[in-house]
Image 1 (tube, rainbow, N blue to C red):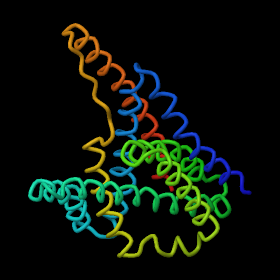
Image 2 (image 1 turned 180 degrees about the vertical axis):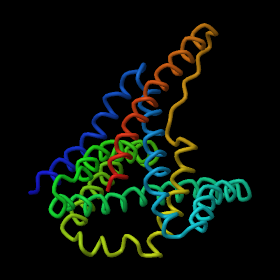
Image 3 (image 1 turned 45 degrees about the horizontal axis):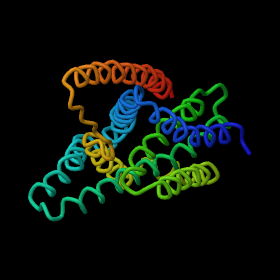
Image 4 (image 1 turned 90 degrees about the horizontal axis):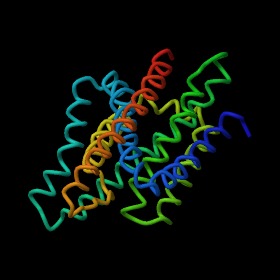
Length: 241
């Protein structure tokens, strides 16, 4: 098996492991949540959306706004359907990340054609936060077995993208695909904003509340800073190519 492909799969498997280990430590929960929120939103805003805007122009912004706002509007207008709408929105967001995995798999083949290209290595590095995000989204809502299944599908999608890269590359700038990307990106931003599956702990003691809030702010800031640094590195590499 190709070395980069093997590393990408290993990085994918590492994501859920890191998430579970960090979330077991009370002091690190907020940090890992902030990291996931910032890195995933950043990948969407600075890597995915510019591509859709390049292909679709202003229409891509309309689609993103629609993807972000429509689920909330439906939940507000039809409260009985709020739960079903939330689940459907979550599924669409997860589907978008899985499709992104297929695209990543095809991009890994660039090392065959471009000597010294750093893009495949950047893809390997960002597979860990992507798989962390999938676990973060799916596990609280659907359970461990579904989360494991989604990670398995992500790996299979990466393999398919790698071995059928020519076919995948032909579809990347297809108008229908870009419409899907823009709409699902907005949906995923909506899902990230609502932070599904996070437990909220309430403290009766006022002093404990203050300490908890201070720790939350500190750990969240640290997680966000790490995400921003990683995002800058990954974005600069992808822009070079």
